[in-house]
Length: 341
Image (cartoon, rainbow, N blue to C red):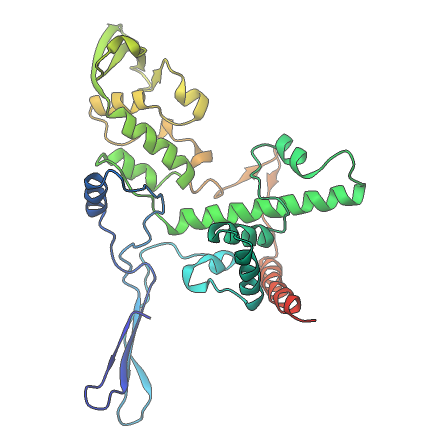
């Protein structure tokens, strides 16, 4: 609920307003100036939640009938709505059950920090006994299985590991949909890519944007009818300590390749490419440097397997919704059962 009003005479509640959790604006200029003034301020990548959403519902109390009536209603949201599968991750829907409060009390008694307490509950929600992040299939199997596991134990551990992976992926999708990372510069390329990249990839790209500000000059080394080779020069007291980077710009395709090989290795435009694009007055990152696998919409579209056959999503959506609802109900039953004898 956004706000309410009471009668000055009787003190009775006579007006209520319900607004979206993303109502209002977070002024990035204020955040940036505050960050620059305090060099000791700890940097937090919590993202921007306020998106100036105008969705609201106003109701007033009819004095004659003593019933609430709708006086104003704005249905349209200015942002993407969360899915039923991720609704429990919204701040307004986060609730601690009696079982979780009891668990947190026991953890607190043995000096477990609050952040670690929530991490333990996240791990329990994902159904795993280990919270180690899986970076590859090899490390995944190595972490959760061993030569001493029986076939049944092996299958159980794999199922738990996959459940944790899906849980962590759901959390990242929720963050990408509901939080916008803060910018550190005023370059349009940074604001462009925070809408395109996932948060994890954007923070890596943002680091390259910030580091590109250390370069001051882009000089032509050689040129022919097909391509042009540039060198980017960095502002430093000891210029001999920095490697000279060369940018090869193809005049036909417009694609620029850096000698550092950052884009080829990481899949993200390096600081030298970003500075080069800025030096030739290109304010937005061309599509050639945006790989689909790093974007928020990478799951949207068709997927084919190795044999060229299209992989379709679950056909019966009602079955999937029922599975999600039953999973949430089973968690409630588990919490209640853990408190009973």
